[in-house]
Length: 239
Ligand code: SAH
Image (cartoon, rainbow, N blue to C red; front, side, top):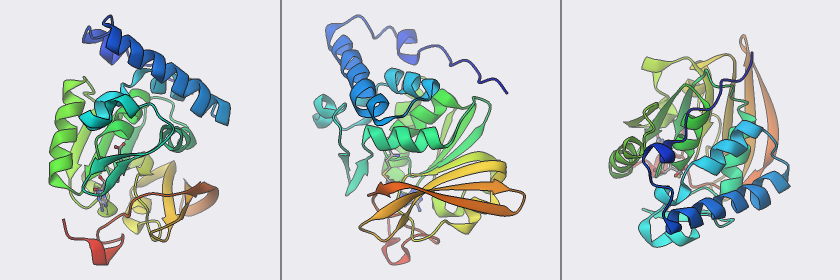
């Protein structure tokens, strides 16, 4: 199947480019893609193009805007973080999105990863446990024109059965093991990327489904905030 062409640039539609601050951000974004992503051997041109387009500075707290394109995770409050650009790129690239997929993300946070997925796939459903973050991410994604990203509030370890199956599932928090409901909601030939390990250190795992066989590949070591909920770290499940 040929990859679907990328949609028009969201920020162009809003007429935001043209002022010097935003040109500065655009340049920072290009440098981010070149030095942090391409140089680390992520070559999927659609992924690179989306990372060049999605305005990451809109998806970080105001006080961190100037650091939005740094090679680091950033705090988003409530002890949570927005992932380093490279890890967003590596997880996204591992999903091999072609443009027609329905994708599920667990752990919306500020919505940056959801925006990147929305740029690459037909539809994105993203589940956030914390109500405040979910409401703000939904508003942010709508304001920036990501009409195909849908935010739900709840325990993402249960998946989102009403819209299953998903061709791809991305878990943006550290799981003790791959939540069984997510595997059940994965389409034939589908892929899950998920950090699995203890609360301190994890390995990024890729799980591929072929009929009822699931093949797991270890991608690289990583560090995420804990996945809470029924199939996550249960003792920490209070909101
Ligand atoms: N993808 C985000 C960053 C995610 S940080 C971004 O791009 O900004 C991890 C997020 O997972 C946090 O917001 C946390 O509240 C959420 N989370 C933790 N456990 C969860 C669960 N069981 N279901 C849904 N969200 C969960």
